[in-house]
Length: 313
Image (cartoon, rainbow, N blue to C red):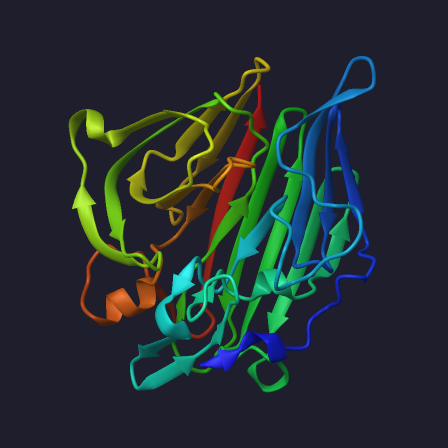
């Protein structure tokens, strides 16, 4: 297991380059150097007010190991935890950096801790890339790949595309997703449906897949202060947040983002609805013969991509 604290990371005092997007009354900002993050998403309201869809990132400072619980960041080349920060893929044993917030496990990939390169920027769209070179990186992922994000703003929200192309000489495991932090208040109503739920252990790793039927398929809750984390599978591709201010936020995604992580921290300071391609610890579960994990393999030159859409009504 690699110690993540030894990795050369951008300091919290660094000043990121912020790229603004505008489409009518909708506004967004993107910070490529700070892990390729969508840093804010909000609507301008009459009288100089604003309605935040995402929790906005602080304007200064970024600590990659203690990232702000704000904006949206990319999950590549895996989502959530890898037990013990290690897994076996074929004949290869991969040992990754554990994350201090989830030790001894790896957490949320590493692309969201690394600077991305801006390749296109217009008034309402940003495109950025991240190239992983196993020979010149502190991250112990042994396969070369390139990741891309394309963020497009329109009058009602944002379309967030993410993709990965393998540049490796051999097959590589892959997972991806997006991790938004939604601005919410106590009592906001969250709804979605899913056909299955992963039971998790005390470490937050997936353990067993359980099929849901009837009313158990429907998640309908009010945002509160109790800490909750749930790993849903085969969800319907649409989730909604009906907020007490009268607005509705709609989150949409489709394959390969067939899994949905529902997370509320203790105190309820934000809400995460994360469309992802696999369950927590999918690589180890798949290696043990567990079905339905969502773990995938990219052959050399093969690519995978996904889209999440967020609308404000």
